[in-house]
Length: 247
Image 1 (cartoon, helix red, strand yellow):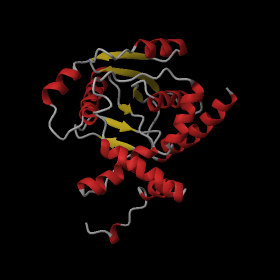
Image 2 (cartoon, helix red, strand yellow):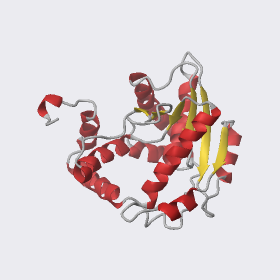
Image 3 (cartoon, helix red, strand yellow):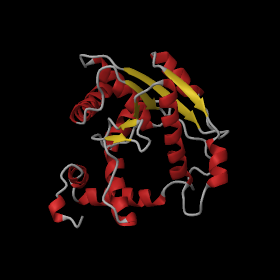
Image 4 (cartoon, one colour):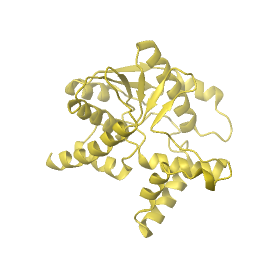
């Protein structure tokens, strides 16, 4: 457990810096944490509980697992684990699988469509249950991969902001792991032995975003040659020189 504590300390330092810098959490906030059962969301939930112990104010953390409706999805292990640690948690059953099957368009991956549907479900839950913020487990790699994907495939310069005010004008999304690279999260999940679960989608592997996987592979190749590549890309998100752009 000593190794786990050391890794957690590193992640806590980075996530704490992000929370303070972008003012993600304030006194009295009610934070709904999206807990999919993957390594990122487990890390997020643990780190928010760690953060709560070290700040001079109170806020509420409740995790929700959105059941997509696939028969292979089993949230019971997540529920038991949360109960064993005293984490507030509930499962929201949906029929997302039916919506995907009926409305999926050619050229759209199952994963990307499900992600959009899940975000809508989270927004609805937050409004229904009185949560003023929704916490997602996107990490630094997600941000820079999204940046490159937007530039290369849609001709835009954009990414995932640390704090996002949703288009509905009601929900606020926060990403406390935005300064934490995936490698550190992988190590943390391994030593903590989180009960990882899959979404249960029957076409999960085929439905993955192949463009994102190509970008991830490209970054890995570049980083092998230039170890500061990813750190530079992450830094660039906060150092935009508008005078040297076309817009």
